[in-house]
Length: 264
Image (tube, rainbow, N blue to C red):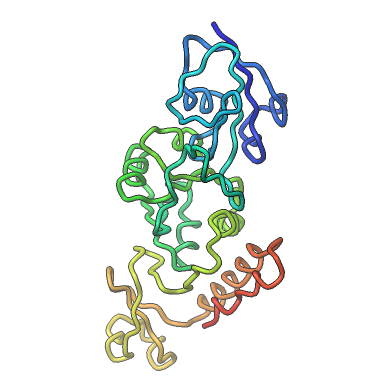
């Protein structure tokens, strides 16, 4: 047995038991565990960590610990440049793409509504999700900490909120997506891109009551589903504008003025 001292900072404390939050605590371990093993052993998914210091020195996840080491674990930094230090997470993905676990179907639809490439299948198992996230270079969204602790997962996020609308706001804030929103550009059913089509081309796919009531239609390039601006569109537009306002709260003056992104 050996003992090390551990301290987690900022929102990483949400993963710890109450008596371990916002303070240093001693941990007894067998052998010489790696930093990753220790971090996840106390309940923190490695995808939530950006920097680990051992005795004040920046280290990687595969660093093995020794008796008496002092371990400081930091979350993803949004505004602080830590370039000279060793970031334990891979570099951010150039394209923001998501994979949502089986319990996040409504969130997946909301993200598609906002124009974000979001993979979702309601029968996918954990192994499939982890492999797809890694192989497809997608950010894995989940409320399952164990799923994020799989070694193959490099980019992931544990959602704090449980309500889908609040989860949408959380994702927009967490990944600073407000300027990337392109509402109503993706199919809610299959994630394909939408394109404008003439009413004559859409007519064969429309309910009889819709023909003649609308003159603007979009079709999914992948599955062929037709979209028009009915009552559902107005509800979705209100939700889009609300999510943008909520995700902009707390930003500097001027940065929140992005409601034009949700204009019809």
